Structures are given as structure tokens and as C-alpha cells.
Length: 473
Ligand code: C2O
Ligand code: CU
Image (cartoon, rainbow, N blue to C red; front, side):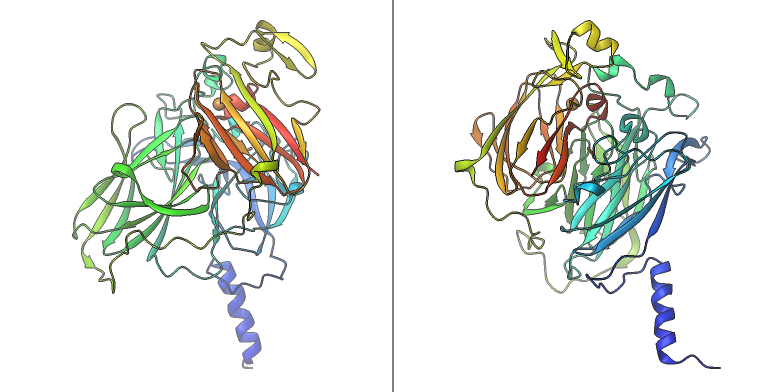
């Protein structure tokens, strides 16, 4: 019996999905549920010959599998929890349906060991996003639970020859190559910069090697999944264009000296023309430790070269815009303050926790050292409520000696002022780094109904008090 054409085409379609090949998008169709299992595993973070590290993973991998979907389509993921702890999935940077935001205790209950939870949502924006747990994230992310969610533009992008994702993490390992578990929850870290690591990995390797070809035009998607470390990465010997920040396209600009500073949670999409000759190597370096650390290498194919029809225009064409709110109405905006206090060398004497005023000693005995507007940790009531469609401005005032990466859920924001000076950036951010004693004013349209968190993405700071929420009604 021979297959008729319809069966043949159907069979191919299934095979294509199974192989993770691009499928033809049907925006109206419900997506097929894919499963992601959070489960203990092992990773070979260190060079060959070194012991494997026991980690927590998605499907045995850290970074977890890259989830990929086309803009406007639906993503359906069944989280299966095979960890010894309750967990959730949060879709960082996705302007998502609130019920799918994955915040334990706010938008859902954490998923107990042995159980599952189905996430199903549409993705409005193309770009580079990521997923991670939102329950004890300071521990779960540090153990290796995170992965990229890449949303492809509606039209395949002709400008790039290749798309390379690089997820950067900073592990704290003991001499035995295992995660230093004794340091989880240490107030010494929580009250300072957070739990910094001692081993930097790119895509789960302490020395990433990626082959490139002369003449290739790369789209490099960088994501900082460190719980605390602000990374300063550089692609050596190349001109590097910044194309998108936190998933959202910007007017392309050349990076000064090729450096990109990324706080925990932030992403950057870069464009690089590989214009060294065959046989060359370009280092990917990181300098946040005060010395230049080689974290990876782009190794040119020894002989191959690709000839491009036309040189790169300067600046390059921007990525297609996402459907962000058209207009910020600053004249009649709702103004909100967010004062950050506490931490080592700070002057936090007391704060309210769960409705009770506590002095610093009591706060510390509850694991708290930071506050937003005098409140430490999640409160019963939201920080503010905004009417749907209203523009909100927030004055982020860092009255501490430490930088903080302020992350808002469900929305992207524009930085309109830094230290009183009007901002020049056109970026729409979901995570905004505010340096010690700095002040940043952000604005956004509260257009996504629900309960949304605001917290520091130095995850130890979040756990130690820098967490609040707002509602859009
Ligand atoms: Cu990436 Cu509230 O988190
Ligand atoms: Cu912080």
C-alpha cells in the first residue's frame, strides 16, 4: 500500500516538530504541549578530566533546552517537578497573561514535587527572553535552573547568517567541583552584593568554543542568569552592534570598545560581522572581577570563507519593532516612589514586615536586610494600583551602597531620567540597573491586568526584602 499525498505531508509535519525544525506558523492554532522536567542532574562545567557537578536542571540540561516560538503564537509547556522542592516557571520579560506569570504565592501555588502545572500563553514580542523558577529562586537558579525562550520575528530575518545564544552564569563551586551548598542563605552575602560565584560559564562550560566562518553575520543573544554578578562581557577584536535590550529592539549602536554590561536578568542581542581571516580566534572576555577572564572563544574555520553581497550599512537596519504601547502620557502619569534602603554600610534601622514594624536585629533574624519604601518583603497589599492604560512613572532611588537590578513583571519600561538628567536611551527594559546612590526614573503604560511583582534581580536581595507588587485593574 502506498501513502497518499495527504498522509505523507502529515507525517512530515510531525517529524519536523519532533526534530525541533521551524514549523509554519498558524497564529490561531493551539500549540502542542511540550514537557519540561525540573530534575536533579549532572553538568560538565569544568574542563575535561574534572569531576561533573551535581546540579538542578531542565530535562537534564543547564541551561535548559531553548524554547522557541514565533511571535504571536502560543507556547504550551507542562512543567513536571521532579525536584525535592516546590517550583514554578516564570517567563522573564514576556508581557504575559498574568495567570501564567509563574510567581509562587502571587499568581499560582508552587508546584509540589511529583506534580505538574500547564503553562499556555501567547507571546506578543519577538526577542530574547528566558525562563526560571519563581520559588526560592536564589537557590533554584543558582543550582542551574534556567533556559532561554527565543521568540522569532514573524518574518524570518534575512540579515543574519546565524543565531548564537550565549547564557552566562557564575557558579559558586567548592574544591570538589560541587555547588557550595553551605553558602546558601548566608546573611554575609545577602547583605552585600549577593552570592557571587567563582566559576563563570557560558552555555554551561567554563571555556566555550564556538566555530565561526569568515564573512558570517552573527546574531549573538546574551543572557545573564547569575543570581548576583553584574557581567561586563566583551567580544574582542570585532565591531559589535547592540540591536536589542531585554528582548526589545533599539536603534542599533556600536558598543564602546565592544563592552556590554549586563546585570542579572538582562539580555542583549548583538550583531557582529566575523571579519577576521580564516584560522583566527576571537576571545570572549569578562572583566567584573577586575581582571580579564577569557570565558570563551570564537574560532574561525581554518579555510572556509563566506562572501557577502553587500557590506553592512552603518548603522545596521534595526530589528522590526514590537507592538509596545504607542504613547507614554507623562503629563498625567501616576507617580510612584521606590526607595531602596538597607544592606551592609546602609542605615536601615527598621522596616515593616508582614504588617509589623521590626528593628534591624529582628529583621536580620527573619533573613531580611533590605526594604522598598520602608517595607521588607512581600506585603499583603500592593505597593500601588494602576488603572488599565494609565502611564506610571517610578522614581527608583537607590539609597544603599550596592547596585540593584530592578525587575518589573508583565511590562517593559523606559528609563526617562538618570540622576535628574533626561535619558537618551530608546530601550524598553524589563530590568533596570540602579547603581549605589543613583536615581533612575522609569515610565511605562500599565496595560496588562493582574498582579505583578517588582523586585531586585540580585536574587538574594529579593529574598532578603527587595520584593513588592502592584496591580493593574
Ligand atoms: Cu527573572 Cu521576578 O524574575
Ligand atoms: Cu539588589
